[in-house]
Image (cartoon, rainbow, N blue to C red):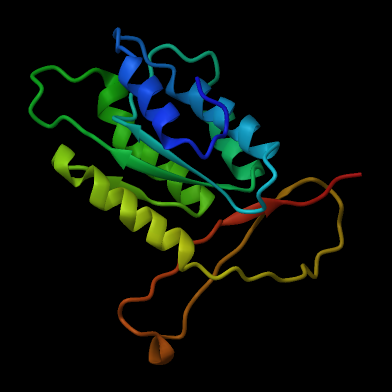
Length: 179
């Protein structure tokens, strides 16, 4: 609805004007955001998804979006607003927390569960702080094959040197270049 802009008021006006009508294309929206982020000029890329994780209208599948997230260089953070007291949750709503957690985790991001809407600002601030306090590491693979296959990566912190408040958050793999 709004292209990249430093104008928070423009974003706020558009969100305020938007009305829900029962159909959610969450996966298509994530794909659209990944396409926009791919073409952005900033080297660090992150998106924040505010959702219950339910999707009942997307043309793209969960598998396609998982692959798109893995192939992107963007981190996905999710603010999950999950209804626990609704009498009849749809299958999409029941699977929402798992979907958002899997997408966030695979991108090196994180799912934050929102228990009260008054927590949104504080969770947004936590995401901002987390993004500003991350370290980026890199390595050169010893596998020279240019086969386009997915390669798994594991990162561990040494227990004796790790303060309790530190945790790892990283992409669990990458696609090798292909010819």
